[in-house]
Image (cartoon, rainbow, N blue to C red):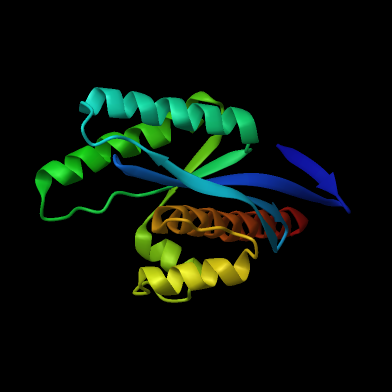
Length: 177
């Protein structure tokens, strides 16, 4: 959802930190360089359920979230490869759903690596989760951050807002040249 505000466009951005057990999500509003926290949370699945049922629960949760909050764009954190191949594969399943749902809803979906997100929020790609959460709280007063997954998702949304703002400024400058 885009809204005209004082000659600028205010836009809702959804950040998603995919996981099969916990998928974090964060919704912000970006108005130029101003960011405002709208909502955040986690979609949790029961680890006792079969993987297809957990993926369905994730699909339904993200679909309901997008219908309720109507973001204009989404950003998803890229998968990192760890030593446990089975865990990486399951994370890939959840990430696939996290990419598919907003795409099916007609949203522009962008992907960001963890280091890029950390650099955008904290200033260094080697920041730890505590540093990221602290900066998210400073940048988005009112964010509840009940789990690190929600904090990470808001960080992805912030990263997307910064990258989006830079791309728009560059495009505007190129159009004037």
